[in-house]
Length: 319
Length: 270
Image (cartoon, rainbow over all chains, first blue to last red; front, top):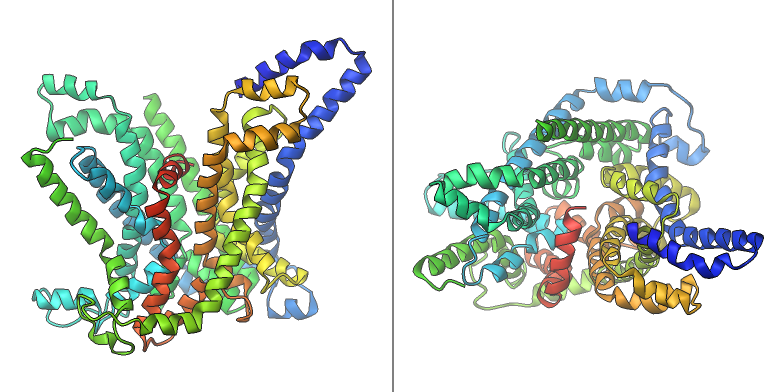
């Protein structure tokens, strides 16, 4: 940003020799040009992010359903969509599931991700290659991962059950995806697997920025191993941890692909989250008004979380 | 590099971690090479690889793979055309609106895809963009454009202003400077952004699911979803499709390692 000011100062001398009106016209043309570079992106963001947010807000106050697509009419209904959605028995289930899904996924991804990042910081033969191959689960299309996990977790022929039965951990196949008490656990497990590479990458980057001298000084004071982690690594890593957690929560709240691929929200809504329920309302039942209302509630949760967390962590840093 | 006993010990441990993490990928490949239909009795190693799963997959999903390819390439071209000029403006101009655009990019990351899909479905329905390649390219670019702007901007910010000024003093206009100096210098950032944009559009599932209603235009992710949505009788074809759908990611990781590293380092912390 500061470079831009110097460029303006340097280009000014030849221009100042010209008469004032022409200079002003030139400046205005300059501004127009600069805007021209930014404009396509601004328009795109407005159309594909701004418009949907506004449109969702509007739709959430309308009776926007199958009939609307034929007649073009969507009568105003005030807060009725919100009332319906909030009163529905699925809402509390979906809200609880969203909280459990997010908390479970983040906890698992973060703890395993941090452990692996600390491990890879040791720099041993092949560490670089292994670390880059670890990115693969993150780069695969979620639906492809979902498909293979669906088979691994299959009750009768899945690899996981074959393995567990062979080791005599369980007597018969566990119905990972078809039991109401296990579906959410299974979905969280797969989502942890998906999220580990992201956590390792960012946390590893953060660890690399901690100067070695700090560890040397700590070692002189007798702090090595776990104590070095507690008194050097963790405090130094705090800002990066905040970023990972906030992004992790914001991304996890809106997860849809993995759940749709594995369980479709079932059985009996046991793995239904607010995101999947919003999808179901709009695209399975064509009740777009209610789907939008639920979508907006999800945006609100996401916003509230980000604001509260950033406030809290700023206060934490100031202390 | 320490080739001591602990070093080797750590390597072994690292390989074990990786083996666990990559097991699903191995399993996908293994299953895809099992004979048709009998995969319920899958063996742990594809000792007698059978490619009939791929035959079925290509016969049933070949067209969808083509659709995905066209959509992904279209999205790369469109995203870079939008993102590169914006990244240049954000890194080297001081115009009003810069902060608004940057703020917009950050906020865009918080908007759930389902909210975007809800609104786009109704808009696309009115505009006749449902079931169209163009509609999917536009929608899928929403995964790539914010990322591309950030990653190209990060690179361009480190580009010395002096080379731009030199050209300006020589009388080159903004478009010319951008085209013949800024873009060639930013080649690596453009490649990184392009690769990831490709991957995002190729992997897109939500827009494929919501913005297509017939099988006229059907990306492979949706084809795969419909495979596993019904009762699966032929896992080898499903897994072969999953392998084919995963190929771009694997190729990218193996061939363009340098760019992936650049992308994950700058892009991950958006």
